[in-house]
Amino acid sequence: MTNVEEIKDRVADDGVDFIYAMFVEMHGKPCAKLVPCRRSTPS
Image (cartoon, rainbow, N blue to C red; front, side, top):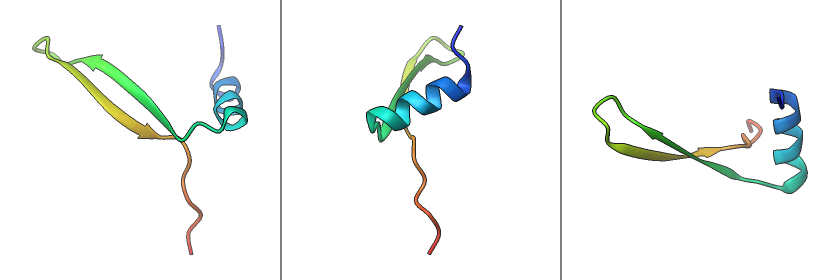
């Protein structure tokens, strides 16, 4: 099984900006969200 650090490294190496997270809510409705992978550094 892949651990979190390996996934973070792969995302960074591939230059991924967003992950498309899909799930089913409690009532069976399919939902999805774009989750940002990188955070900008504070100014």
